[in-house]
Image (cartoon, rainbow, N blue to C red; front, side, top):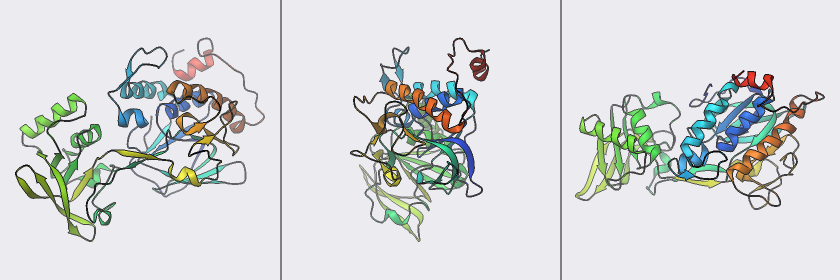
Length: 350
């Protein structure tokens, strides 16, 4: 499965059958249901890894209402779905936000991301959960001048951090994951957290502490109070700890202060909205715009339940409708994976 994630492209538009906006569990299962019907998909998500809210906000939190899985964590569910959709070779564009959508003639849509990547597609599936995730900005004077130049809220290209003095702030999985990924390429890496306890996975905490013990990185307890630099180029940060303030050199800052959810650019796509949710029918889960579907927590209809399993149901019916858009005039023969040799062949289990 290709992941065209960390670097946007401003070249020729990507042509595909379907674009799925959102890589949470429902968006991932949409890859599966569409794939069974020979509908190729590209998946776009503003986060830097698949899983959406499940993987980002509660990767270790148990989920008890997924059919057939009495208990599964958000990360485990994501991993299982990624394994399940592997046969269909979806391309992922992670760390991208879809900013614009327009209907073209010829029954297609053009989508444009904040990184300049363009898609030409017949079907759009909005599976954005509660909307787009927006990183929480640290309350630091003048931080806006550094954003996008030396202060970043996600990592799109590891190479941009090679040889740099990197300061990572946070104590969750995102902060620890990037500590472990960037430590080998950074000139010097410092992790800063307000207390010497971490919310991340225990094995990540153990690896981080091992690097600190081996003097391959620094761990500081405290908070950032000021940034120093010129013209967007960060040179140092002031940290307040129990024993006073100290200034440390850094040319890159990655603050992981959590995320807020907003409807984001979807609000400007010309769709009917109801209190920041997208109304859909319950036959196709299509929006007010033909060819654009909304599944999962971002949609609304009479009797809607915001459950992952409800989203899975919605995806199955959406895919049936999408087939007739991608393959107009072609008859759809409904098949079961348990008995269809052609579906089993697609899944690689025949």
